[in-house]
Length: 110
Image 1 (tube, rainbow, N blue to C red):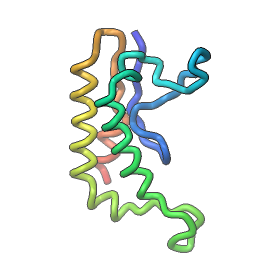
Image 2: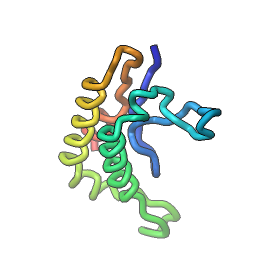
Image 3: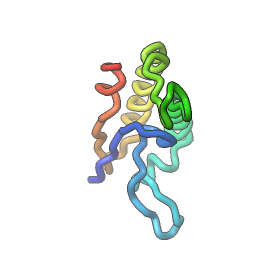
Image 4: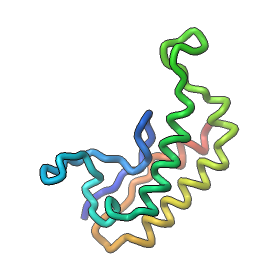
């Protein structure tokens, strides 16, 4: 069984892609049913765009500033999107993967 990690980082959605697929010459989650699901991909992209927007460059006297105030304002929407993603993963899970959620607790703590 493969482990699908949910994490957040700049320019990366919560569907953590850390497996290099030699056939596709791309980094993937390593879980085909997830990679091929348009709904999960759309939600992942929305979360990525929202989270990445909190990073500001050459702002507040710093080279890279994380706008935690905006992240706090958006916390409810972000948690809603994460919940939708987890629900979709449950729907498409064919038993080939399990999910490790490292996102919800982080966002809830903002």
